[in-house]
Image (cartoon, rainbow, N blue to C red; front, side):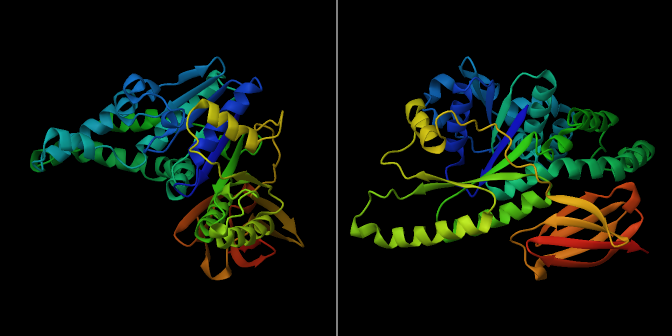
Length: 395
């Protein structure tokens, strides 16, 4: 199975491009699911579905044709399916503050529930071999980062915090519930967490396998959008995901020669050159600005023809270079990470347990070290030619 993850700044056209890719894959014979992970779903809208007729139906995979389905993860449905104990406890706590039941139910939708639910479906469909390709229409960049970092975060919590927290609360619950205005969570609450973690088992490795998962970054030929695309490239690389394509959407066509657009044309030409240089050897596709809104199947197919050559398979594996590697060089061990747009002043390093922690700005990545390096600590690091090399040594 292949997973194609479309990410980028809000408003750049991710959903339309993900939908068009789904149509291309379906046309080539792949069993395809396009799944929206963005809480503000617009996938059904891109096919121009009548809202009143399709409301709620896309909360499960909804067939577009015999080989293509779309899925907009519905958090209300997912709470009933997967999050019942956790949600019930949060609602009970919120009710003690005096807020209404409706408000409590809304506030009980915790950050990350939607993303984790989507991951559980990806894992489930992978185990069932239901689809050949899953296209993920992700939320804007910051939320996409949360999506890909969740397996690592949850694994760390389950490994370091969960057993201790569950044991302590089990011991103090009888006494604490007598004096506390709010009852502590029952063991069913922790059982629910453990069950969810079991459904996510292996998803982290799946996302980091370049033969399975590829990231397609969507951008526009604008300076501010390009900057965010560069940051996204760093963040995905830091989290071990392979970026195998950049899609520059809404490029002014050559036939637009009106003087009104002259400055736009000059600016776009300059940025397009920068994109080709910045992201090489990752290819950058260009999609023109259409004369009309891309809405409905017919226009999505037109977009697919602009994006892909005749017979081109979007599921093809084109880049498998690992974002980070381990090596032994001149008698010492090294960790090498591809960080093409990072600068020296924003990179931080430290060791925690058997993990190397790399920080870039506000983002943090835990990299599990192999057994031969687990006892070593970072000695020095250098950032050259887009690669951060961390030398490890004995304490």
